[in-house]
Image 1: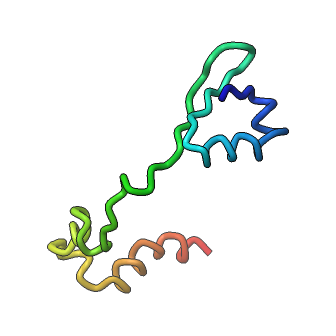
Image 2: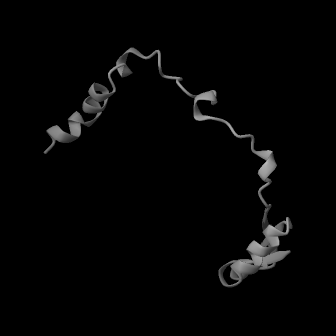
Length: 83
């Protein structure tokens, strides 16, 4: 399906229905192609718990963040002192 910027504003329902049919939507602006919207593939995303993500716990070894409350107070201190 091809849709102009105006179609996105006025006919969004039709655009969403095309995506539901697993049909990519080509976006045009003044007759020129600007981008393509692809439907999300639900099977493509593996489900992962947050604790299994590679970036989980990446700052656990930092000494300055062992006490979270103290770290936040230190961050906010200049702002509070300015009052």
